[in-house]
Image (cartoon, rainbow, N blue to C red; front, side, top):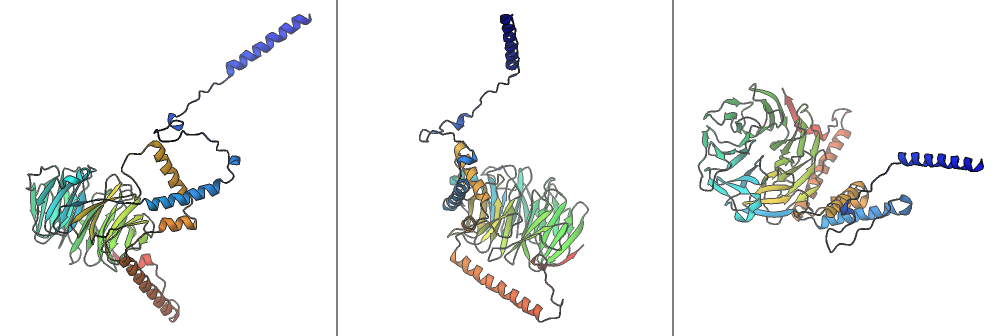
Length: 468
C-alpha cells in the first residue's frame, strides 16, 4: 500500500512539472553586433558595464566633468569656414538657392553679372556665367520647382533664366521692362508669378510682358518683397518710409501697414510658423512679429553693432542667420534675444546677402570682397561620414551639455565667442550709449508727474503705428 501511494504521488508531481514546462516562456537573447565588436582594428574591444546606480556613487560629478570637457572640445574644434567661391569682379549683392537642389545657387554682383554655382564642384568655379544686366543685380529668386529663376536690376529690367542652361547659353528666356529701377524680386510659391519692388509693388506673370497688378500705399520706394510660404497670396513689402505692408494679391488689396521707428532692410517668414515674420533693421537689431498682432514684437534679437542687411531661416524653422554691415554673421535660435554663434574672417568685408542651404547643414554669404563663402551651420561638425560609435558619442556629449547648460562654467564656455577688436569696441560704445539713454529716461520719469512718462517695453517702442 505504501509503495502504491508513493508511485501515485510521483505521477502527480511529474504531471505538475510537465504542466509548468508547458506554460514556461522562453525569450531568445538578441544582441546588436555593434555593441560588442570593434568598428576598426585600432579600437579597443567594447566591455559591457552594469548601469546600476549603487555601483556608480560619483555619477553626477563624472557627468558634470564630461559636460565641461565636451563644451570645451566643441569650442576648440569649431572651424565653421569651409571655402570661398571666387569669380565675381565686383561685390556680391544678391543670392538665391534652388529649392529642388541641395548644391545649386546663383549669385548676382554689382556689375550686373550672374553666376550659377555647384557646391559639390567648388574647384571648377561657376558652371554658368552671364553678363545679365548693366546695373546692380538687386534681387534673385527661384521658382518652387527649380526650373527657372528671375533677376531684377537697376537697369529697369527683370529677366527670366533657365536653371539648367549650358555654359554656352547666356540669353534669357524672357525680358520684362519696367518704368522705374527695380529694388527686389520674389517668386510665387505655387504659380508662375513673381513680384517686384521699386516705385510700386508689381505682380507679373512669366507668360506676359506687362504687369498684372500694381500695389501702392504711400509715395516712397518699396525696397523688398517676400511671399508667405503657407498663405501663398500674402505678400510682405518693406518701404523706405519705414513701413511694413501686407498685401493680398488674390484680392488686390492691402491688409495692414506697420510703421517702425527705423527702416527695415530685409524680411523673412518662418517656414514652419508662417504667421511669424522677422525683420532686419537699421538700428542693429532684428524683430520677430506675429502678423496677427503687429502692435508689438514677439522678440527683439540684439547683438550686431551695425545695420543688419539680410537674414534667412533654416528649413527646420528653429534657427535663422543674419548678415550685417559690421562684417559678421550671427546665428540665432528662434525666440532667443542673443545669438549663439558668430562667424567672421579677417578678409571678409561688409555682408549684403546670406542663405541657409536646403539641407540645413550649410550657410552661404555674399560680401563686398567679391566672394561667396560657404560655412557649416554647426561649427564643430565634419563633412566626413561617421561611424555609429562616433555618432553616438557626439549625441551623448550634446545631451550632457544640454543637461548642464545652466551651470556657470558650462554656460560661460558655451557663450564665449572670439570677436574682432573693432566689433568689441563698437559693442562697448553701444552699451554705454544705451545705458545713458536708459538713465536719462529714468531721471525724466523721476522728475515728472506720476504717469507723465510711462514705461514702454522695448518690444513696443520700435512700432510707431499700425494702420488697417
